[in-house]
Amino acid sequence: MHKLKGINSDHNTCEVCHKTNLKKVMWLVEIDSDGLEVSDVFPAGTCCGAKLLGITSGSKSQKEIKINELARQQVNAKIREIMAQFKEVVKRQFDGFRICTNYIKQNYSDYIMG
Image (cartoon, rainbow, N blue to C red; front, side, top):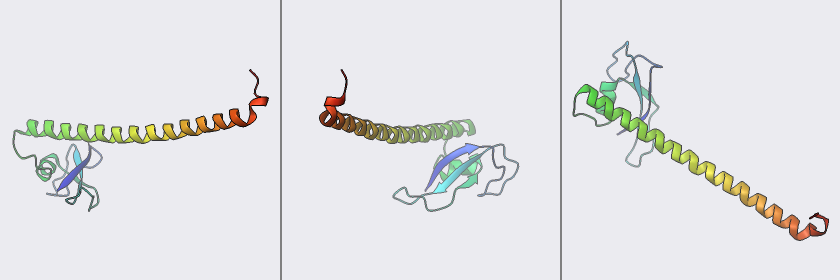
């Protein structure tokens, strides 16, 4: 099984069939049954990449639509993951600020004006 890591024009050779002068490549990584990465990321042409991802039916344009949709889903999942991490960091900082403010109010209320 494989996972799509990205699509771009940073490389022009497919590491699967060794075709050269490609306009764009898909960056793939092999994954195990638990979804853990078990290989280095490698470039594959869109035809080879689609086959490795299990996208075998449809015309070339239909396959590209499926590949782009898969890439979009993975980008959205990564954005959701980053936002969840950011939300947790902000929550911890806010909780720390609230604790600190309450401590100051409880212990130094005589010195606080107003």
